[in-house]
Length: 213
Image (cartoon, rainbow, N blue to C red; front, side):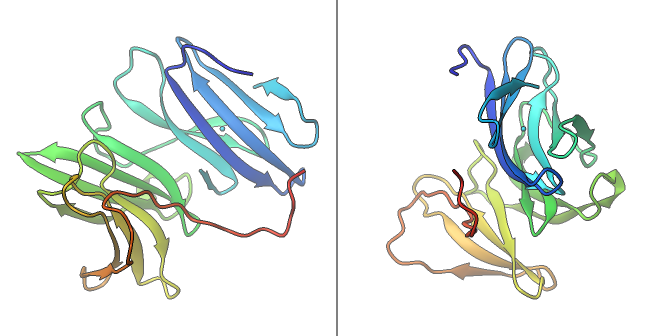
């Protein structure tokens, strides 16, 4: 059903191996907080939401007055919420960030102003749920980075795990780039694709043999 006057809306989709079922989660943040998920077998909505460790994650405000966002996890097995601790840096309204899964790990990217420069940081959580396991994957400063959204979006590890594929979002008059970032040498190698527009989005596609009825 439609939900009006929402402040933020989040969607997630994942498979729960315990119940052998797929779950679509929508979380809508209003003046309070309302969440619901659609059970693929029951085909009904219940009031009860990017997937890592069988947990769907989102960044949300605790209250409408909050300026700090928290990382919230929704466990597909227990259908319970929990808070996931973030690395030690301030996530406020002046920082543009995103959380996603990459190679089974929780990954956080943030873009912000620091001493007059646009800085982009990418963090990865090596051990799920352990705050001390957050490791900064890369940090860079470029004058052409796009500030209004996460500028360096991690997509995937290479097969041997020594490189990370990034989508660089740059200013409007400069073409976005797909690049390989070498974790050892810290070098960047651009991936050339003909015919792509100046600005674009990238999503990962994973095939499945299981039909969704």
